[in-house]
Image 1 (tube, helix red, strand yellow):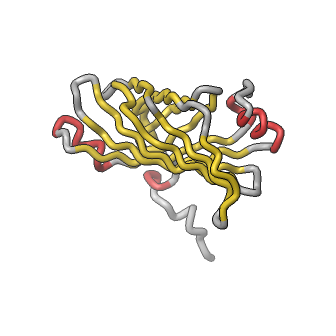
Image 2: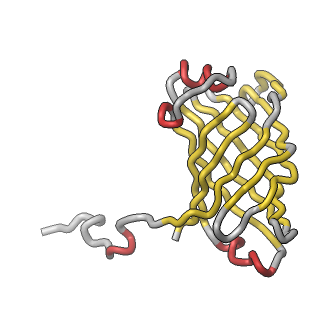
Length: 163
């Protein structure tokens, strides 16, 4: 009698546990539309500011950029780098990839800055962090995930540390 791989897993490998890291709100003015290139339809956003708040760290978004690839399958891939400054002055580089996907009419409304319910589309991110600040050294060695919602003036993300 054979046992499937999932049945043989220890409990620690059967589910994923997270804890809140912070909520991030970015300011993103209208995008620069590069247009159709040989590699895809490209848009670029500048991130001139924002805020983040969490139990273990909070602060402001100093700056960043958001390079977007609009795919043909009603999905937008975002490659983002931002610089965070904590309330105690530490600098943290946050790099993340997002996928924002949904029915074409929902994606079109988001692109026009119209209000859409967060559950009407898929918006997920995978951030990683870098810092030289000793008090936040732990963030260099975590995996995180996030869920997002797009407002007309920029996204809001709830970010979680994967335990």
